[in-house]
Length: 409
Length: 139
Ligand SMILES: Cc1ncc(COP(=O)(O)O)c(C=O)c1O
Image (cartoon, each protein chain N blue to C red):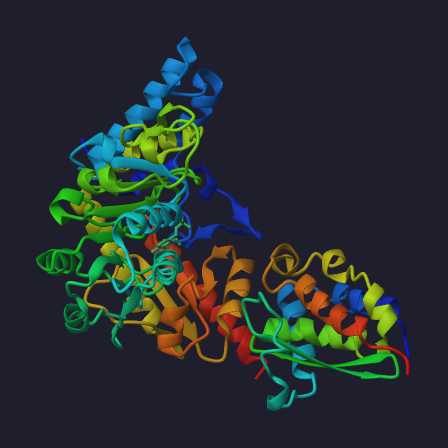
């Protein structure tokens, strides 16, 4: 039995409140999503009954905590269809996952004269670590541009791929425009050139297909907090063959097998990459979020979210003086716009007075804003609990702000 | 010339007389409108306050220990805030600016986003102005 999407909203206690005397309309889901009751309960349960340090205790709580933590790893591996649970490394989030690869893969495989390819659509988290790696190693940093519609230029991408390319790092969905990049095609092209690909799935794993084996992704990174799980936990999936060959990122406890005065041997995967006491509860909450999400029929969910996005695009495009950015063939859950004469910051602040939460500014994608020649956008972003009423409230809010400003000019 | 606390008290009074947040924003934007235009050549990287979500420029000039301020922002709300700061501080003795402890933004309970955020904060703007005040001495 699949769960009906219309029943989702009631599962998120935070949504049921007034903000500035208006019912909360939460449209900042690309920044972080809210958590269903089951996720909150899983964390409370963990701390009320199971809390212990893991992997090295022999008492009952330690065993329970370890089992729950490792069961979460399996749940996550299953969710993204990793071949092995040990290909799942827990991190603090997408940013740390990418930094781990930029460091460890970089140490093992990148040298002067090599090239790394990213795109102009990347979040700074999938841009800066590669930029710095290239600086460190004397490698060349190459950036695939996007066009007027917000689509990557695959011809340029193809022409950049060469025997010097060590890795391609690209997002599946752009967090500032919502472009759904042709990730399978990008991976195929890269693989034809013998180049591995890191997929930044921060904005896609909760909305779109997330089968790492079907995609044949070499690395796949996402954050728990954007997929209805807790903050502070993220995932790095890496193909076993890459993770085996990469040196550790952080070092210390947990990641070590044997330490003597002159020799250190590392623990097996995934623990080699998990130094120190991990966030024990984070993965447990994340697994609860995945258990929640998989109650819905994926096709139905995708249809629902696509329909809601299209409804938003349609209504927004009817507002005079409003510009929607990008026009990609496929867009996911992101509505980026500006209203002439009203700075994005002002729009965000005034919408908040009507209880509407959106994000404004550059969204950690300065290259995107520079390419568009703007200082920022207003971004409304959707989650499965959003409804047409939320979009209607946004549209009304925008119109009220327009009236407020029109009186001034 | 009135002191900084005197002008601040006047602003608190003015805002408290307004009924609802729409009127308060109206007034704020009006204040921004009344700000003398800042010459484009003063909008330099040096005069840009760092760490703000919207662009805020302050150009300062020191005359015999008093700091004179010109300012602008691409956000109308921030421009209103900036106008308040100019009315409060421009022409005041630099030592008063250096020791100014503005409370009106908290007192009014308005623009929480301005006091709570690292970016765009009145704090960042004040730090910028206090820095200029520190080097402004009586001849
Ligand atoms: C596409 C993309 N990549 C990376 C990140 C960084 O995620 P986190 O801050 O959770 O590490 C984000 C979050 O905004 C994102 O949208």
